[in-house]
Length: 257
Ligand SMILES: [Zn+2]
Image 1 (cartoon, protein in one colour):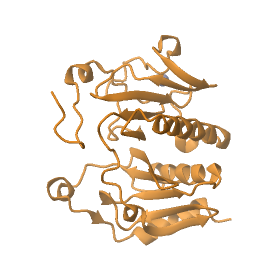
Image 2: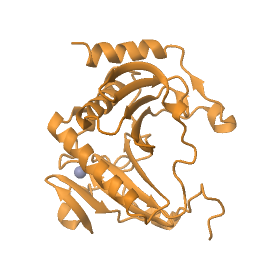
Image 3: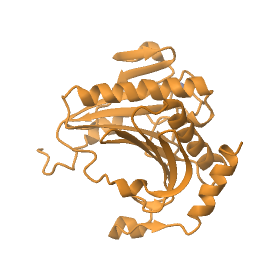
């Protein structure tokens, strides 16, 4: 089947059906714990490993998985700082390398965490996926990263969205070229930690999505809930009225010293 549009990917359902699901089925052995059985290791730095995805569900795409740690129950929001920086440095470097290779129309770099994030494996990981024909940033806009400031420092800005992609709450980090990776990483970790611990009681899931625009790198930290019908049916975004309060809370918990 030929892709009809440049914003559409063919998904192979037979491959999808073979994928293990360690989130839904706790009995499923974790494929990212058994590193001896990993198929194609592309690169590694200690416990951080980039592998070719065994389940290539997407047509016209090169799918890789970044295993973040050898601790199955670990979570990015609680990594020691040095490990956090290593994971992000490793991921950003490989994302950049794939983008610069010229082999792909665009390259996606993202993370799923939790049962309703779209992920199927609990073990902490991210994905870097090269797309042959699709521009994954076709709907990117700078305004989706505008918002109430949480932190603005040395080329890094952290905001709570006032014009979200989807709604109701989205956190954004912008990283200017040449700025310290550590500050960018600290903001991402604080955002993820806030969502899982100090936000909504029922928030168990989030995504990280990375984007590149001009020389800046952007990360969207999205809490995941059941998607709003207003957005699904009409593309209408709802913005929570307490966004300034949320921004203040993050500032108080993570950046007040
Ligand atoms: Zn595992």
